[in-house]
Length: 96
Image (cartoon, rainbow, N blue to C red):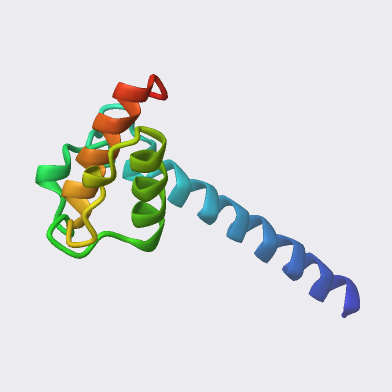
């Protein structure tokens, strides 16, 4: 009887593994034709109007100080505006 339970356990593990593999194969994010998860323009972000994140604020502050342009940092920017400002400062500084 113990041998039968071991066989069932191995079969169950095998079936689970096959099930997980087929689910992974069906994942739309692994389809090279799927472009829904690519980098989007900040103006298209669904959360772009939310306040910038702490990480964005910190990085933007650092970049504005390095560029000797304190006016580039505005604590009232939203996520999308902060991202665009960060990109612009990185290009100006040669970090992009």
